Image (cartoon, rainbow, N blue to C red):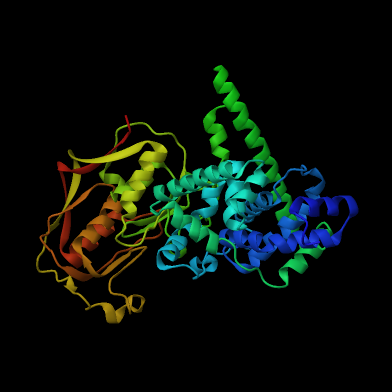
Length: 498
C-alpha cells in the first residue's frame, strides 16, 4: 500500500472504500497538517482538533476532488483555512507561544531566521498563487526532488526549479517587508528543516478513525469547526473566481465589482488579532510588522512599550501616531482619510526599529506618511507655581508604600483619581496631563531628573472626569500649574503620498 502515490490512495478509498488506503494518506501527511495547525493555533490541543477536522473534510470531499488534485498542497491549504476558522471562531483560543513551533536542528543563521519567519510563514504562503504554493509544499514541506515537483505540477524539472525559485523570492520579499531580512537559500533551509515536525504518535490513528466515520463521533466544537472551515473553503473558491473575473473585467475596461470590496475579504487572521489589545499578547507574539483590515466591529484599543505597539480596530491616524510616537494632540492631519479600521502590530526586538518599520509599512500598505514641522498651536505650559511644595521625591522614596511597584525599576500607576510615578521624568507627567486636557502640554518646570511623585484627587468614574480637581491636586501636591498659551511646537503632519 505504501508504494502508491497520494492520488492512487485516494482512488482506492473512493472506489473501494479502502480504510487502509485512507489511513496511509493520514499517516503520510498528518505531521504536515499538525505542524501548520500548531503554528497558527498556538497550542498542541488545538492543533490536534484542527488536524482531525482537516482529515474529516478530506473524507467528506474526497469524491469532489479532481483526479489531478495535488493532495499535499490541498491538505496544506485546508489546514491553513481550518486554523484560520478556528482562530476567528474563538474555539478554545490560546495565545501563540513562540517556542511551540521551533526546532533547533539548524545552524545559528537558519535558527534565527526560522524564529522570525515561523509566525509569518503561513500568511506568506497564503499570498502565493496555487501553483507556487504547491511547489513550496512539495519541495520544502514534503522534501520532494525538483523532478518530482515538476511531475506533480505537470512540468519538467527545469520549469519546477524556476517556479520554486520565484516562489522563494516572493516569500523573501514578504518577510523583508515585515522586518525579517534573509536570503532565499537560508529561508529554504529553515523551512525544510522546521516547517514539519512530528505529531503525537497516536494522532494518526485517532484522526483516521474520526475521518472514516465522516466525523460522526467527533465533539460538537469540532463539528462547528468543520462547518465553518467548509464555508471558508467555499468562499476561497468564490474569491478565486472573482479575482479571475476581475482580470477579465479590467482587461475589457468594465469594473462591475469594486476592487476594495474584494480585497476586504482577502485577509489572513493572525493569532495576535484579539478583541482587546494587551501587553500580554504584544510580549508573547513573535517579532513582526503587520497592518491588516480589522476583523472586529468594536475598538479594541492600543498598547505600546518603547516603540513596540499593538492596536485593534484602529483608524489610520492611530497607526500613524503609534509609528511616529506622537500623541493625537500633536498631530495635524493634512488630508481626509476613510473611516476604515485596521489591526496592526510592530514588535521587533529592542533596537531593531519597530517604529521605523511601521512607518515603512504605512507608506507601502496605505500610502500614508508623516513629517515633523514647527506649527503654532494652543498649548498648556507646565510651570512651577509653588516651589515650597515638596511633591517630587528622590527616586525610590515612595516604593515601600507601593507593593505594585516592588521589583520594578520604573513604574506608573494610573486610575480614577490617582496618578503615581516611580523613577519617572516630568515629561511622563506632562504626557498624562496632555491626554487628560486634550492640548499639548509643554514642560517648563526645569526639573530634569527622575522622581517619585503621587497625585490624588476626587473622581467618580471615567464618564465624570474631575479636571478642576486634578488641577487643584497638581497645585497643592506638586506645586505645579498649567498656563494656557499659544506658541510653535513640533507637530506631526500626516498626509497621503503624492
